[in-house]
Amino acid sequence: MAETLTIHLVNKAGDLSGRFDASHLATAAAKLKAWTETIILSVPAFGTVAVRTDSKQGDVKARDLVCYLLTSAADSIVAQRATEDLTLGVSGSTMMGAADKAVVSEVYLRQIVQGGDPRGNATTNREQLVAGCILHELIHNISDATTPIVTDVHKVKGGVICRELDGNPLTGPEAPNEVDNKVAATALTRRVTGVKQHAGAMPA
Image (cartoon, rainbow, N blue to C red):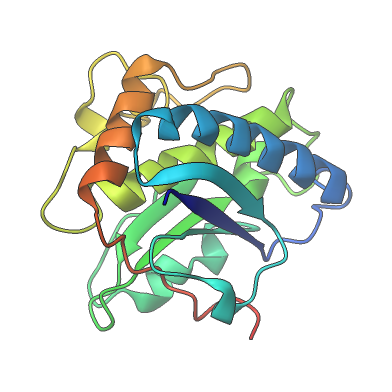
């Protein structure tokens, strides 16, 4: 029987002084859900998608995905768990912890929504841009954060969400295309038992 692919969005950033409040988050979650529903059309294991913003640690199952929404890279969970020097992404990062072999995906809302400026105005199409950045990190999560690597997300040709982002960041109107969907679907199909997610920074 096909199962539900559940994506847990853990908002640890608050509402950025109203620039990304609960309604904006709900819109971004709905956009992410719609995109992921298209992805799983070619993944036999999954029949439906759920995107949750109220999850606790014990809610995360074997094939679920988790993404943390942080205020900025200064709050990085990836950096806290790293055992060596690393360079975080501008808008988000995904990396496996050396100790527990669990993957952390995180996005930095102030950078995405306000260009990194605490007093900055909100980006146009902020909800879709946040959803795109989350999807980018989650495709890293299932594609190249653990071995064996299924696909190097930053070497994909013709993708929108899957591409080298340095100097070429995602923009609000962009949405995943067929290339992105195939990369994500291939990874979800090959990761038969899922990818262990770091749930330790979620509410207990």
